Image 1: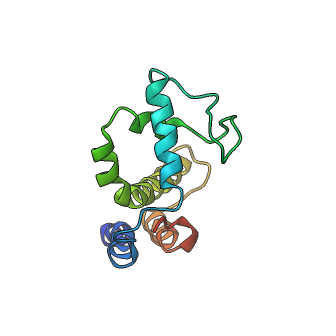
Image 2 (image 1 turned 90 degrees about the vertical axis):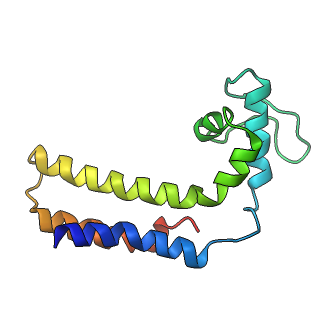
Length: 133
């Protein structure tokens, strides 16, 4: 039963992704993310501190770790992978929450059975604010 709940917890975001994702249109800030990736590339794969852009301020205050990781890949790969980025983060969040509960149990912060952990992960996967569609 525990394995079934965990399986459904991971299957549900995949189903939401397949039925409700944007098929053709990139996100509204896709081009700003591309700008940051290109700035990091031009800065020899170091984080950008300033950029000359007439729309935003020239101080870069946007988190750049994901952009730095993507700067090592081609634009073609980024464009192909970007529609699946939300699903990727959803799965990472569910895994992180499961790992957090297992650590709480392991270090005896709280006492949870395997079934309680499975139900908590199952319920967490249905929380709507975690969806990147």
